Image (cartoon, rainbow, N blue to C red; front, side, top):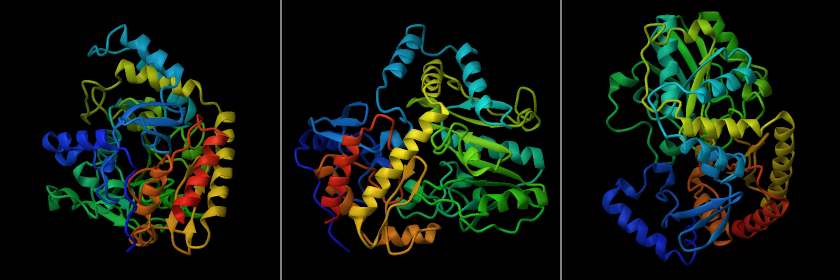
Length: 423
């Protein structure tokens, strides 16, 4: 296995902060995906960010393709978002009562996604997927849930089985502290293969475009097959669009793929970089939720006025033309990366998302993604890019998130950095 490149020079302040963090925060990070455990070295601590860039505490500037793991589609500190949040904060940060902005955000989500008649706002993608499954079980009267290897649906107990993202990065099939009973009703199938369901299945939950095992697109017929199979046995289909929702297109993955689920889970983009997520569906399904129905779900900070203000500002800036323009830019960027990458490196692209795999064949499932990670080349690539002023996520199962703030100069610099790092 190749030795990872050394971390970027001039990280003394980050080293000091990480040492302090290790004493008071488990592993020194508040989310495992931020750790450098799988790539070696010390995490860089961010001091500030603007547009396409982040600056660490030592003053190093990076062209940032992490972008808060996809939340900042407009780029960091977008003036419209900053103004909206500042204006909202001046009126108070949380009330424990309904607000106008949460109604407006729910209306905006519903208007963009045909079939998403009603929306419940929550604080995280984990809450969204967990709650959607609760609704699905209540609506069907069934217990079993089908997931797909390499897809990540948050850290609730029943969904921590063969997950991607940080779970895969750490080499865990699930998690300590999760009981056998918690996952006894979870069935894990291979991605891009339509499983045969039975009448015990309440729901199938899937990333319509997998972005937690690197970028893996659905093969033709996969999502259509899931829709048909769920209909055949009376199960519900859930799209986890925490990443893809309002990033791929105006109406999310359903607009691009032509397949509509029964329930949607959204996050990241709809919060404009603040903690906010949502799940949505038909009126009949969503009215299983309390206080109308018997399914309990609650959150003190759900629909927080700062987060809803940020989300509204972001969505207001995202019309259909913007998505098409970003997709064109990302497509060109991916082509340029593929040109400099050479044989043995794959650069998959899907609309506004792209990734990197190591191997000769395109990756179609978690097995292929794991084979790519096992080459050991990703740590050297990531550190080589950091040395050259370009930031990507510290994990081989993550994707890159170009934003509307990235310029052609930023892409050119990134291509040059990739060429040098891959050498």
